[in-house]
Length: 108
Image (cartoon, rainbow, N blue to C red; front, side):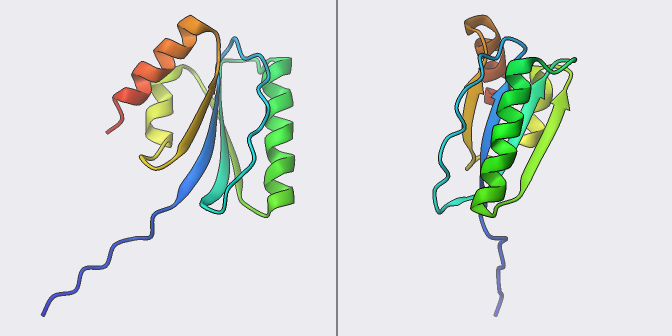
């Protein structure tokens, strides 16, 4: 007799903020969402990125879920931080959004 134990599937709401972020509204969480993660690309963090970071942290605190934020050098760093079941929201200009989506398409 063999037993297979698989880890529970978790889903995060992931906000990817490009250098050209316009300050998207943090989406409402669903029952399936277990955390909010903000991935900010570029340094220094822009005022728009900072406002989303602050709003996401407040939403996570209000909803009682973990909050995590990462500062990334470029879009390719996104792929290792996003899971297959995650809800992904990208806030960037059209050209940067395409680069981010291409990086996400190459997820392992």
